[in-house]
Image (cartoon, rainbow, N blue to C red):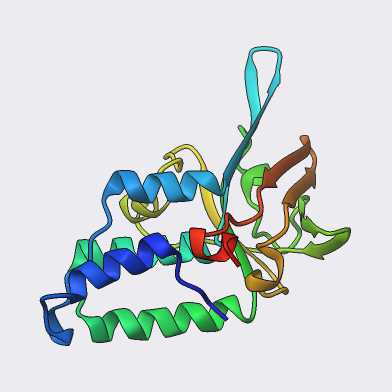
Length: 204
C-alpha cells in the first residue's frame, strides 16, 4: 500500500484545515522538494585524464520522491483536492506495477549517450537483495525546464531518461539498491539507500 510520510500528511492537513475540498491549499517549497529528491539520488563521474568520459545522475522514484513530486506539482499549479486525488491514484497504480529511475546521462559521443537505441551498447541493471532486474530506458520528452524542476541535477549537456524495471517499487524501496551501467566507456555503479522510516513507523 502506498503510504504518506508524516511530513507530507502534515502539509495536507494544514491545507485542508480551513478550506473546502475544491480549493485545498498545498504547500511544498523548492528547498523541501530538493532535499527529498537528493536523499534518494546518486552521482557518478569518470575521467580519462582531464576529460570527462561519463557522467550519470540518477534518482530512484520511490514513494517518498513520488509523494514529494505530487505535492510540489500541486503547490505550483494550485491543484484542487480532486485533481490531487486522481494523480495520487495513478501514482499508486504505478508503484504497484513497476520501479522507475530518472537518469541524466552524459558521454562526449552522442551515439554512446543514447540509452534508448534498440541496438544500444549499454545494459542497465537494478540490483536488490541479490536479485537483478534489467531496465528498459525511455527518453523523457518534457521540456528542459520541466525536467529541471523535477530533477534539479539535470543539465543541458546530458540526456534525460526514465528507466523502468519490472518490479513494484513498494517491494524494493525498503532495501538498499544498486543501479549498474555497463557499456563501451566502462561500468558505473550508483547506490540508493533504503527508504527512511517515518517517526510513526519507527515507533511500531
